[in-house]
Amino acid sequence: MEENRRIKITKKLIHDAFLELLERLPLEKISVTDICKGADVNRSTFYAYYNDVSELLREIETDVLNQIPISVDLPVIYSDNDEFLNLLEKFFVYVIDNERLFKILIVKSDNSNFNQRLIKMIINNYPQDKTGKNPLLVEYGYYYAINGVIGLLRAWITQKFPISPRKFAKIVLGMSLRANEIEDMDIE
Image 1 (cartoon, rainbow, N blue to C red):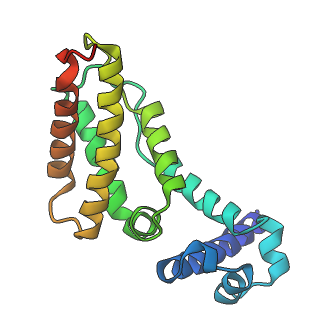
Image 2 (cartoon, rainbow, N blue to C red):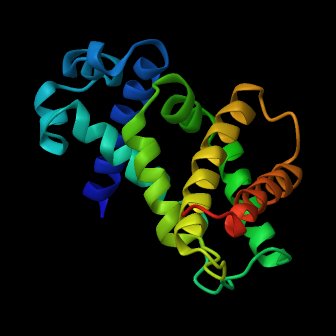
């Protein structure tokens, strides 16, 4: 039990030192030596847990993604659904509660890998309304909405959350629903 606690503490020190460096430097400029110096650990300690800096970043990203609120009970059609709005609000509260991480992962580091993983997580865990007449346009509308939400999220974080998570959720839901309104468009 004590070893688990020590491991958690050591990994937290490494994570915190790495995040502090990421706030100031691009990923390519961060070395294992820099992280170890900031965490006050030996290189052998770092390598006991991680093969390289990229693996450390991936673990941090995975932790963030695994904690994003999801629900398996959401209806497929969510236009007027308070449950979906509540889930979006919880997601945005999670972003505020983890502002530093999201600022680093989405805003500062321009981490397209994290953005792609976030998009995949959303696709896998948030419902897609598939009731439209044109399945291709419905799918494109969904991808457009998800990528738009990432852009809105970046702006919301950068502007230091000028509106509440609930209002932001309403805006995101409204814009996402509008993205699917082109379903009747003739693309042939």
